[in-house]
Image: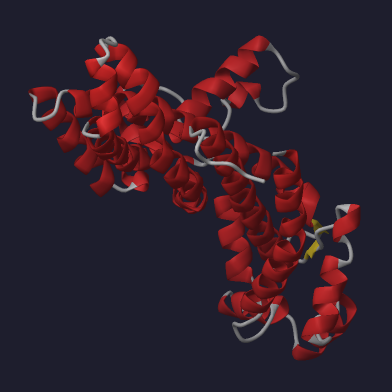
Length: 327
């Protein structure tokens, strides 16, 4: 198992290099660069810099250099933790995005926890009570969850929490705790602002996972080994929890790993609507302004998250199903 993990981690290095090259090429596909976009934006307000000033800045920032030269300047800083320079924010990329990356990771982990805690028990209940009123009700809720977009749920929560309940529902922290030293009150306030976007992010995928868990359970419960276990006199709860659930979790874990990109993309709109510091708003802004190193760093880190989540999913599958052996 350790050899498998080491091999997978080593295989990520060339994969990340390829992803960084492709990401950097895609970001540079639109015509122009950061300065031409800045000129266009300033021109709409009646101001702006001259072409001569733009060219001088272009030479200073190296934007007039070839694609490969710019790419090499970007990637050579990676071993030192240097992800490039943001032209728009006049700052290094990592100090600019690190807080948002950690917050998005925390939010993503919480939303995955919400998915698992809700989808697995409901899926088991629906399978063991097939065609009952509870199963039908859960199926209706699942289809509603699949059809309602996350940003709409965020708007509904802002109305209910902010208008009807008079709660502070926007941002990652209440105003009185911003720029205040750590305290348990501040931590509790942080938690109260974290769970609503985590639940909203998790609900859409919860419905999908619930259906997968239900179908997996129904499939497993009709297999011979379950019939044999029942014929040996094992209690129904033990047959379900020890054998059927364990096998039915395989597709759930596989799909769960593929939910990471969906969580990140969904966090863009939810981050804008709920004013929470996810990577989404800053990533979107960097694409609009052609701030290429910021956008490239986000794409690279998102790809790393996806690779790591797939590795964790493979390890979980090996733990759940003894038939899976990694050598």
